[in-house]
Image (cartoon, rainbow, N blue to C red; front, side):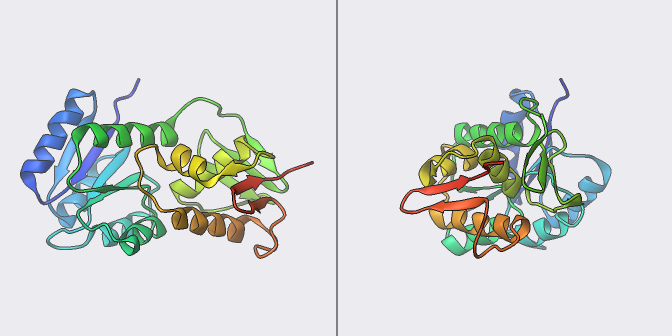
Length: 228
């Protein structure tokens, strides 16, 4: 099996070194960058399976790096920062981040988040094409089409859609969705789920305000309904 390569972007060299040593010991390949300039230099030279990205960097914020990255790549991104306000978390997910880890964190939690995100992004199980209405989802290459036209999606949007389709016609509590899609250790607020549901409706429903498929189950959660 191909070893997964992880880019650690953090200007705290000692911390980056500890993370690198831990991940290398767990079978990953790692590179380190202490600035946005170094990160982009490495990104032009190598392909990465995941990026651990600090928000506060000396030359450019992690948010800005992620914005630029999303123009050309869907590589999973975990933000790591001492900044933990709701606005920071929402911004991180809004611009295409996949997870948000609060500093200080334990190496055990980091490894758990990394493994969970890699499984969601590159897992080989259940790769058959799925569909509802005019929407088709291909898990193997993480693509979505509607009426034959490609639909651009952030990694977390795709994860949520795939989860709902694989559990279609089943009402799922918000807490269960957050745990299964964002991870058991995640501290993501329910508002984040609400925002992602809205984005999916805007991209996939004919009338997002009156969704035909992605239904809200009052006082409970959500369900992807497809009776075809």
